[in-house]
Image (tube, each protein chain N blue to C red):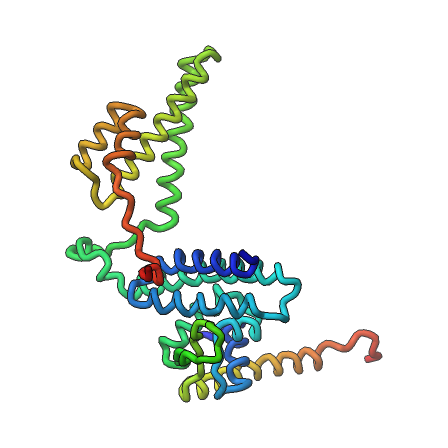
Length: 198
Length: 110
């Protein structure tokens, strides 16, 4: 495969995955528009030497990534009430937590972890315990990952969410592995436009 | 609509040939803007009705090239762009003129 064809394919793939961010009604059209630009860039003889064209395609795709983020944010801001009808029933306006709130929550979690590690180290000053502590830390973070995944999942397989959460907590890290292999449903990704063709 | 630097450049490019259709990469190159700036801007302009877009008809001589989307200033857009650019250029020229008047050219005897 020539370099241009490879760049074209990579670019198409990048643009398709970026377009998944866009609302469904404009997704296919945007995707078609941007993919149509790729051959133009690759065929632009004023950009020399040829590998710069490949670079240009990549920067183009990076820009498209930014553009899709911005466009999806703009449409979301326009249609926020429709997005979360469950939260709209009360008088309280549904808002994602602000940066300050998220920073504070993150800091608190971070401090808890740091203090936990410090107390654990104090309780086990013996350096022979350190590998054990490392394993415990890894298991705990894996459990946290699984719990976060359960909490964010729209639905899980075979068991209710709370049951999976319990399994993850009781049997660490085996429960988490079990959840990820059996109970986890990978998020239905929006179908990239243009993939429908056989 | 706030006239930002990139927007001004896009409008200038489009005004330089108001009837000609421009496609995205063309505008990117002429206005020297990254795609991440240009496309959201075009979408905004389109939403405000200043620019309208149409798909190129599939041609036989295109050599298998996919059809492009062309952007063109609407009549409204043309008017707004002219006004905005005129307003944008006048304070700048005024400032330059003022600066030239108040600050002596280095080397000149004053």
